[in-house]
Image 1 (cartoon, one colour):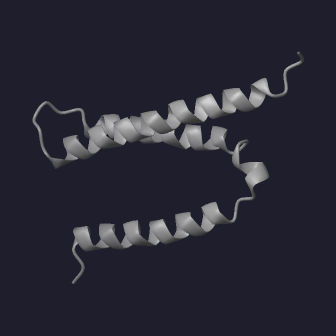
Image 2: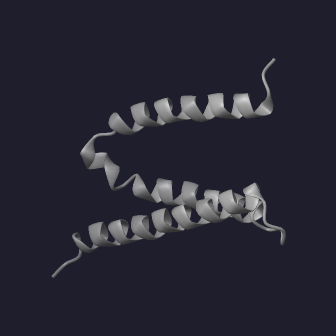
Length: 93
């Protein structure tokens, strides 16, 4: 019988393979414009991680929530910096 942990691990491993295949199929010319969509997804991740890390007692969900908040924030800030740099390339001098 499958436990919830085994089902979660199964979904995680499958998402790794699917994510790798999807990312490798994106041509380099489309990568930067798609950063805004990735920023929106990371913003949703931040909201979900805040929900996980909301309690005062420290448990595994709080630790994973903190790590998710940290990584998603780095991703959002980096995405905005890359998008801003790309948009500055199109400004008139």
